Length: 96
Image: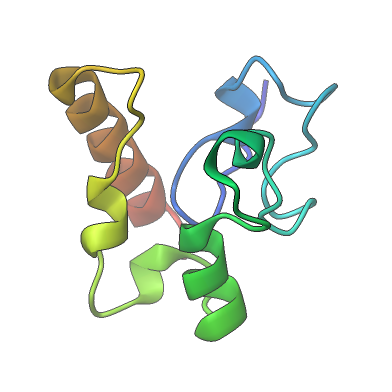
């Protein structure tokens, strides 16, 4: 399956929720499925990147990677979250 890179560098196409439950971060404007657990209405990384700064992705920001990336998934170990962050950075480096 072709990659679908979100503004944070996550590959939406690699998620089990894509494309049936979730169409991808760009398509749904950051209103991702896990927000039901956070109480937010939009992903904070998407909101900062796209809504506040009008960047196409976080790699365009001079502060990348910012503290928003340190949150990680609480269901994963620090090591797993580091691998995910490294993947996000690599994905963003491949974009324009």
